[in-house]
Length: 142
Image 1 (cartoon, rainbow, N blue to C red):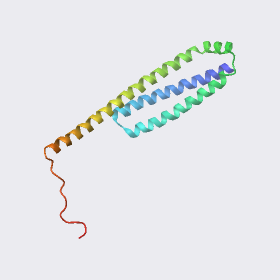
Image 2: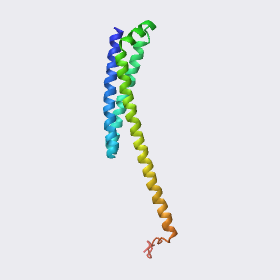
Image 3: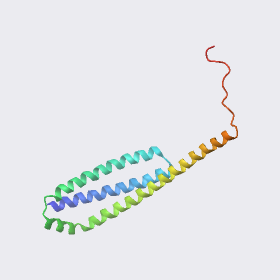
Image 4: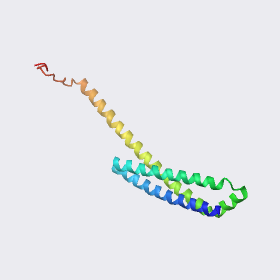
């Protein structure tokens, strides 16, 4: 009985991980296209999927906790294929997440470089006598 329940939880977990992997692919596209609105939407969807994964893990713990060591080992051996599948999906997600992080960091550093060059350009212009701000000759009290 417990084995069937554990198997169902693990299969659901694999399904959720596959959905999360699909969301990660969409996230990568949104980052490449610089689409902030789509990225925000994807992150919200990812958050709900991760919440579902956490609930599944809590259910799994409730099923496994009352089992003795012998039954745990027997069930783990029977469900080895599911464990391997979960690990593969998780590794794919981590790889894409790391790639997204690198892209976002590169974009950040590129933007910081542009900002710094603009600031340096203004400083150089001041050295060449940039024209002062023209003040109105008529006061506002007329």
